[in-house]
Image 1 (cartoon, one colour):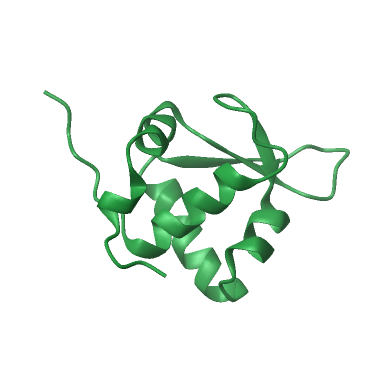
Image 2: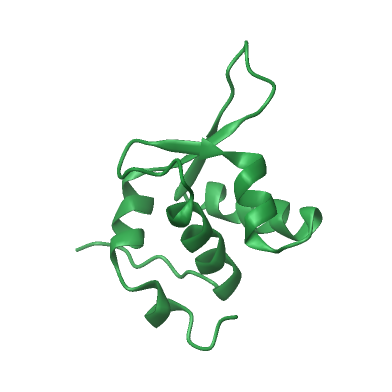
Length: 95
């Protein structure tokens, strides 16, 4: 039996923003963390808290590249599974 992971409205917003990125092409792809931060509409401090929560829940992870000044983020297998589920149901009335 799988454990249900609760997604808050702001977490759903960040996941939708990630999936809408021009760089996201499905499982295993990463996108620039600064792009997701900016496009989410959250202020940097709020985004950091929400993103940190997604990382702590095992939904997203950050990858740093030594020759690149920007970190990228990607979904874990659990995150991909959540993304395939209707996020709107997880966050009714989220704006």
